[in-house]
Image 1: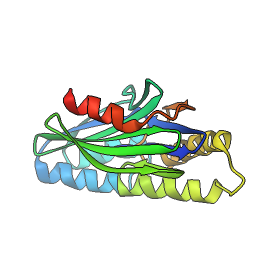
Image 2: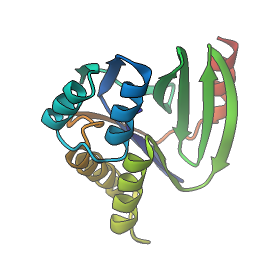
Image 3: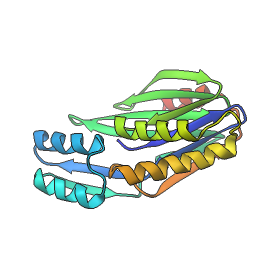
Length: 193
């Protein structure tokens, strides 16, 4: 679980996602201890992560090349995934100007979990990264802010999170759209496969 954040405004939407993917191999209890420390923000650097993994006897593979955000037909799509007990769980965020939807994917079955209209800031990630992103956004967003400010703030959120936890890569992808296409059209298309 890493970090995907988005701002949905009436004139457009912007979304950013880090590129880190971490796989854990080892005893379940050891993996859980390592993940708990990583996702609570206790492990800040990649060096600390490698050292803790060794300490907990967990083999980790860290790659920073997974793109989690994209643009499809004017709609921004972001996705985070986690594996629990061999089951891949994904959360997907769809956004365009003035509207968004959140869907859950389990074993390729897509279920709409929420949708909204108007301006909103949304963060997907573990509790720690969501707190970092929400605080960063709240501290920098003003009533006078516009979509270009949102782009800068999302970039700042990603940079801040990467400095505070090894669960987020320093590289990130940012996409934006001015389209106000109804996101439910693409959700329905994805549901049908």
